Length: 137
Image (cartoon, rainbow, N blue to C red; front, side, top):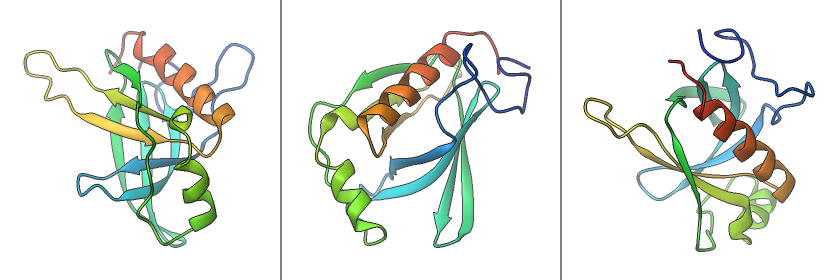
């Protein structure tokens, strides 16, 4: 099923992918939530956390998704891990927007995401863009 053999973690040619790692997700309320994230096949999985436990998961089909950078600096409205939040909110380079398929019957959506460093943001975006260009899901 798609890139990476279905439910397997995605890896680019050199064996490295984005980390499975932390991404900040802007919730519909405007609050930012820290999510453990990974690419499995053609799907980005964002695990919402509440302290040390998983509070649910968001699955995002990547084929056909489009990306754009965020123009404005984002401040995190989050108590947990304030040092990471303030670091992530200081530079628009760390964030990007992902729009899922918006064709007829797709029910697309817009996700605003941020990483904790420029290197991680570039790695995530590169991988996600590559997977979005492949057939699948």
